[in-house]
Image (cartoon, rainbow, N blue to C red; front, side, top):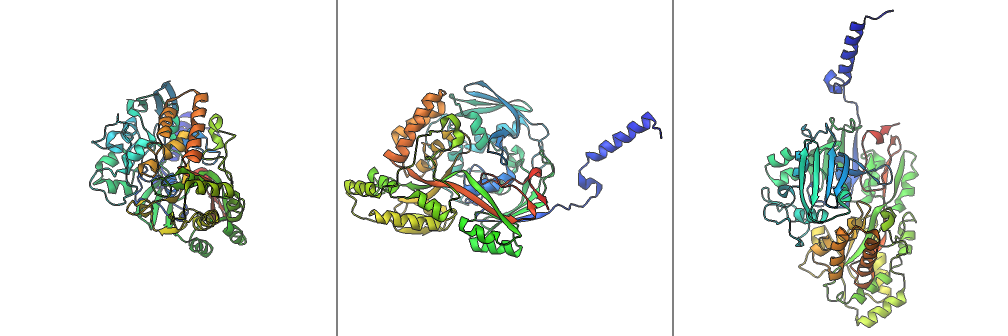
Length: 544
């Protein structure tokens, strides 16, 4: 059978046109599944603004909605890979030029351009009209004052977080429609790393057209594979597939995140078919779940460490020797073995091996030495006065059980640490009653100590923002580390920062590396990430 060339080309053109039409344009039903994920919490701040919600639960939620210029390979080892940026290059020690992907669509259908990227980092979005961006002033803030937002006025934690992520950013300027330049006021060897953790791009039009800031923050418009349909703070978040997603059509029609704080209720809901995935499973529950052949548990250690944090302003904690005693009274290995079934580890302080040449290999957490702890308390003149320990009910996996073990370990060396159960983070940080000890965790969003010890405990870090702790030498080192390019000098600075924060004038003490475990239906083929984030793009979901 022969073909006439003109007829063949015409037919080919028609077929090609049909192939690029959206599936719904030809009336095909959407048979993709929808799933429900039971989580401990969706967002502590009752908002979905990524510059306000810097939390573990937020990291999971935002992996559906937002994307950065440079991102992490969630199905690999969290190495940096191109995201909304197609490529980038250093122009000098203060300037990085970024080439954007073409054809990226926001959730509202607009194309992402250099104008949106520049606006994402603008004064209007990050700082508001009254802040001098050239200032080095620390932005102290009360943390997470949920709905106390008027008009388009930014909540105080937004510029505080922006300052932490970009302490010396002068401007982001469009070069052309798909090219932008990040210009810093001072040298910064980690600007590319900051683009991993602090460059989730938003739609300029959506932000400026919002009736008020809170309306924007509860239905943010970004470029991720899923978009917000409905958000009910502290209850649920429903997301729909973003079918114009540049990375391919999402495999799910919709995703519902449902707040279920109790572990037992999450597990029962999984068995009853109410939930397809349940997050934050304690290790001691894993064998019971996996006895049922229909379910499995996936997970691993992640780039996040659990900490105990000190408020050095408390009368019993002013003397650093008392805080040092806290650190030496903890048998961390016993906690890992008993509460985590050996599924995590005690790390070398607040650092991770993926820091590469900046990892301090011969560093360690304070040794478990009850005798030394007792000596320190005696030398400090501690008389057994109460030192309150503020605690949330299992916001972190095994949080309550860990606290009970810690309190007993501290009691054995003579520390009187009563637990004060709190309902939310506002109560944890409340200054109207004495603050002393609390739980926290710190992550590393990219492969440099700036992403952890500086961003959390430096002059712009949350611990100093809420007024718990400060150290003049640590603050000077933080600024120097942000500008120094010589690796040998940077390593020496980082070691000294660890010495200050973990041994000499303890701001915190690391308990163990965090691990996260997710239980799911076994007929769903899905891979867990070594992070709180959950990957549900086209390459990571299928039904057996």
